[in-house]
Amino acid sequence: MDQHPTTPGQGLTRPPQLRPGDHIAVVATSGPIEPERLTAGCAILRSWGLRVTVAPHVLDTHPTLGYLAGTDADRAADLQSAWLDPTVDAVICARGGYGVHRMVDLLDWTAMRTARPKPFIGFSDVSSLHEAFARHLGLATLYGPLATGASFVSDGPTAEHLRRTLFDPAATTVLTSPTAEPLVPGRARGVTAGGCVHVLAAERGTPAARPSYAGSILVLEDVNEHPYQLDRLLTQFLRSGALDGVAGIALGSWEGCGRPERVREVMLDRLGGLGVPVLWELGFGHCPSTLTVPLGVPALLDANAGTLTLDLPALAERPL
Image (cartoon, rainbow, N blue to C red):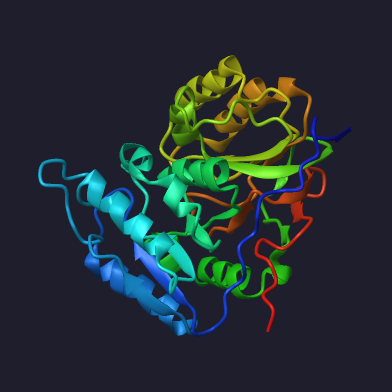
């Protein structure tokens, strides 16, 4: 079957691609950072010819809540400062973990709207910020590895796919993996959106949440959620209307979520009735080797072929 979005979208504003010599800022929006991993991640970014600035509060720890990297106000200030800095060409989050929900509403989105577009990179709990960048700034973003993430510092293909997406985005318009296969066959066109299931479910009912993912190719993944918990989260999506009019769904990794066949059963039970193509295990998210998936870009999902093909490169071509 061929599915088409209710209102065909042209996608969001794509920031420009990077060049050697550009300046990237590392910010901590969630949990505390391991200094050794920060050093390793920054070394990789510098090896690409980028100038790297680590935001002032990246190595902070919240004075009473040790699962947070510094205070909410300081984490928000670091991100806002980096975004408004005219010398910064891209922003990458240091790590995920809980914390973004606490600081996202402290950002001055009116001020941030005045800054020039730039790539914004991260995944996991950073999903809340991807949604906010789309809603408040109309900006396409990159659901990609974190600067101190295990996959980024330890897996060459993960880092290389992000590097090519940033510097040569025309070379990364077809996303696939050896594990990609149809859960529900078919093809669909829409604008990519989504992220980590439990984070997006927690957004439902907040001012930042979009009414639904109508017309979207929804990309979903998660980590350490039992099958019954995934069932609960997807049922929340269904009951809230989030999946009304969705064009297609691309599923990523489910590390620590139990036996893959049980996760597949849950996905088929909860998503199969939507009547749209569903692609199983595209190879992004919380897995040892991960793809960078652009959000806010028009794309074709071909569940039969196991591919997500962008109509446009993730980032805009930059004039010489």
